[in-house]
Length: 362
Image (tube, rainbow, N blue to C red; front, side, top):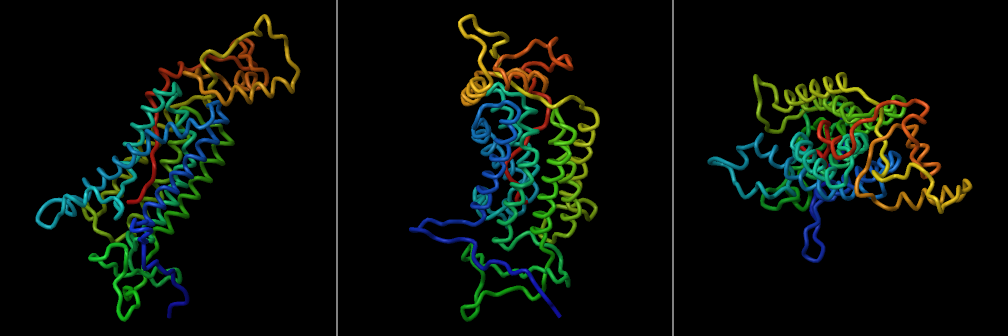
């Protein structure tokens, strides 16, 4: 006897003045907004001017969506090519079908281009996005729930998922009998919910460990990748939607293992402190006609400086960054309490680290 069950929406498309409003698209957009806001907060704490995250998103989001769609099409070719395929469906992304691995690859390319344009090290973007990306994925998974797709195998657990028979002739709507939507007879593992919960936990893990250890050089992003792929592995094995397999195991399981190992190797081999940035032309001394200011005046000036996006940035140690925040003057390396050689400037610092993308819905 079923004590409880998770219902599914019978409709995933609404029309407003004749324009279709799709739940899947709304979830993707909401996820992107969450990721951008988290990244924005973290970028500012590292010295980046306000709303550089939007400049990054302008590049990374389109590249990420295109990459995600290409990955999905390549790993599910029978839906689009061959006797039973329809190539036109390649462009119908509102019906679902975005792959996280393609999103990361495409988004990484877009983020790298943005980093070059803004003069910010690529790794600063990657580490700032690390906790925001799994939160975006968690929000995006709601789109699969609305679409009644990508659920798991049959289960007798109390939280089994009721799934509607969706009408292919009326996309976004369930089949009906006597006006009532039709559900399948069994209950299924709500893999969308499993991954939502897992991704929120991944975000919390990255935030906690990054706060404690102050990861740099893309290691916070590598930590996200490792934690995500562990969960993706076991959740993927519960799913029963059609997918390419090797030796009876879904392709995405192998991909998760390979990506996990690559992220682990990066995390273990790449070392370095967290990167902080200041304008490349940050003053290193008081100007002759500007006497030393009191604390309140310096604080106001610091806020004004933060609103102006510089042409490029230079990477500095945390000690020098904090001094610049307080005084508006960048102290020499030798004056830093823990002087050390700094990484290359932003123009050369962004080509050897991981980056990120928009959302995962596959």
